[in-house]
Length: 415
Image (tube, rainbow, N blue to C red; front, side):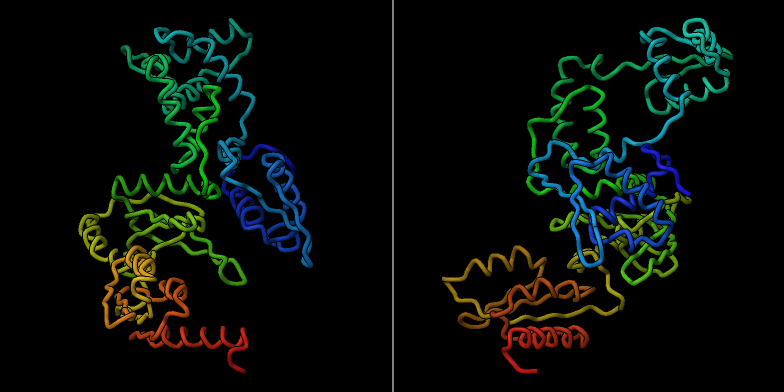
């Protein structure tokens, strides 16, 4: 039996619930099969307590489903940051936090762990073990709240100077920049926390098209960016829901880049798989865990190879074969009237070659690793396509089958 508590110890579990049941918004209680229905009810109640004003319920033949209704154009901050701010803590955590704030009232005040323990007992009549106080002080050193130095055999702690104290005139302008960045940049939760600590709210900036749901994977993103910076390999646990069952796989990969879709906001890890000797991409919202491994000796060599390969990716896929997909599209475009079609083809064609064949007739040619990624783009020119040619038999068959299905749907041809 799972007891209901509003605060959480593991962010991973809540991230999956928020994503599957609220952002995607297509699952009902009956679709939840990983654990008991009571566990689902507890998770749903917890999420509703965080995001109650954004919860939308609908009723389908499969049952009640809940989802998030967010309009980024009206939001001054990302509501999903509340999920990050729901970490559980112990009584000792909260007491020591306020005791430290009181004792380190000046940046010139220094204490050893034993001094802190004695002052807490004398001033607040609370007895802690010196080892526990030392552990908490070291945590605050790691977070940058305190600093430490050695005086002989003693380790002294002191409060670090805040940015507001160091830059009093510049600080308000920095908060203005943080107000903007917390809406638009990855790891915006950090900026939101800074604003909370300063009791400042953003009432200036709004984002018309914000992909706020992807903040749930910022922890994964931070681990991958750290590995990219230090040229380390990582092991990732990947969970895919593309089939009727959940499939988990573990990969050892050398991370190189993070790709972000300008259309959907979805983020991908681009890296090299040593076991398969090829580049590949993984969706960040399917990565459950990242474990840092040793440095990769040939990091710069494969980085150079990746830079040469990227121009041949229409999207994020490197394909499944060693052969390039050659695609040639012949289009009817009225010259002088539909020049905007040519402009769009140049802007969105991603390096393809456009050739004027004859009056009102143009060809678009491109070589890519995975021609299947072009299909949605190509189909936007339906009604103008005179011919579709490719060396990939699967793509050619798929294209004409889709055309036949559409013709049957609109009763242009009989089945």
